[in-house]
Length: 390
Picture (cartoon, rainbow, N blue to C red):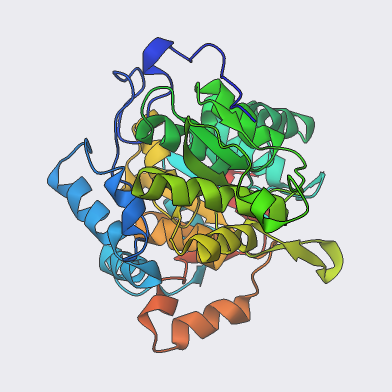
């Protein structure tokens, strides 16, 4: 199958700028990502090595992000402002924290809504924040919706109007990353949804792979003899309800053919997606792990807790970490990213995390677990209404 050639590039050759550049950048730039790298993952890094923009502060943050796993993020989080106490945010403290912030980053599922129902009071809180002149952005690991779909859902559930530029999904951030990292004309093999393909299309990345796939014959000799698109220089793994052995075989073949010059990128490592009533389904992290295991390589992850998602926000808006609040319901994604980026972190207990879990992280002796502790918590973001002049 030939890659689907993308239509008009947004903004001409410059396209959508990467996290390392401001809007209206000067074309595709190679970018050294901030995130987890192992010895095997270094193969991806060779293809991304050049052209990061600088400053000592950025360099230090990227050096921390480039070290492996939670330990590097733990060090960065603990260095930011010491051990966190996880205090309930209420009263004068809530008024002071909100008054000091000019930007709030919200996770969506479990924070603003559950499924198709808004969390009670959430829309009113965001309405008051918007009326007070706060910048509201939405950062989500969900790669199954386009930014336009998110703005429509916010509108439908009664939240303040949002533009697509305020939405930072893992699908959009993956497209932005590949826009930086791939040479002109290179394509991506995608294990993911139509929304992920649409975000690639929007930035001019040719792609193939979304949708069901069947093995090209009855025997392994047939599977490895099927033609490969010569333009493919990246394998991108997102949530894919059509994930199959056939797709896994094809992804591996592209990675083996391309070697270090073929990037392996994942939207997130969320292993389980919780549903109402205590049910759950396998998340994107399971699919990423399958490809990593087959290829014996580590993927670069664009979603939380990797700071690349925050860098995408900072490339779009003049964000001051000291005046930014990360609001989320997951310790290992929302809170860890916020802590490692030097943001104020606020956990809402309306999602997947219980307070006992936070106390276990806070009171234990493990630095990596300390990095999961938020500055503050609320039962629901509706608890902020009194501080906003309900």
